[in-house]
Length: 370
Image (cartoon, rainbow, N blue to C red; front, side, top):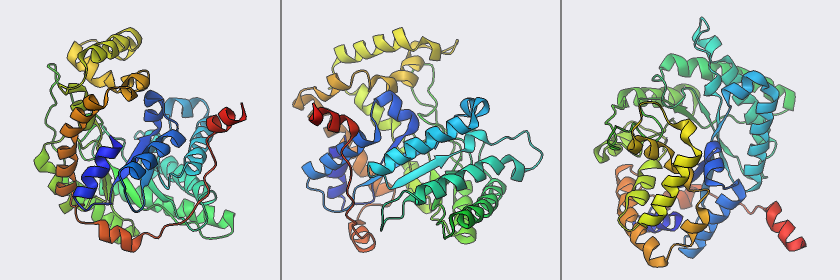
């Protein structure tokens, strides 16, 4: 898939492409950061890509239940993952403490206080570990995707608290600590889309005016690049041009591509049946009482990629080629609609390559030692 993205990017003179893997996705795709980065770089080499390959750790998210039971333990898990990701050449990290925003508190400032504090702490943690010559692009989040829409008041409460906390972190560090570059917001979408009883996707109304206003405030008042839109890939094609007009700094896309893969006529029916049987046997706890089979498999089939990684890797070249031939036009269309076509020259001008020595993954070192 990464090779196909890069082929589409080259055809559209685009280098503004970000490969991202969320904390949750590490689990169900069974890919640690080092493996994901190796895949991205191997794809770039195979496709003759010239220039930087942008890789991001997305939704390095605080688990609210684990945080309630053991705050320091959960925060340490985020620190450990972040350090692992930076060592694997992830130079974009999105910290997501929006899960512990407490809307029962009387003011928005108090609601966002823990989010602001822990995001500032993690910013310093990243700055102390980023390679010399590289400033990792750090993102924050104010509204959990799928929850209520974000407001300017949410943004200002978070950012004001974040700026105060970051100043304290800088004092403790004895020097400047550069802040976040972007802020993820909620404007009406949900990860994976909303699936109907027949397995089709419900239309959702994205509040583009809200997105534009949040991006404006983030840029003008706090010097950020803008607001980030999650959960967008299942929206109608006509919506994508509006993200660029709303000055979204980043748009996250995944589920629609997954759907094209699973639903392709070229995808082996027997393998899909095996994956669905695995989901039925191992993930019934995720099934809601009123879900149809179509809804259940749609919402859980992302969990098939890890357990069936070998079978997917070993698909015949002609099978993979047929599926990718269906995906490539989708990638090209989204690049054009999102306004990132014909941007290769911009990336070449503003991004200065920095050589960083990357340690071999532990698994590879162990294999060589044997």
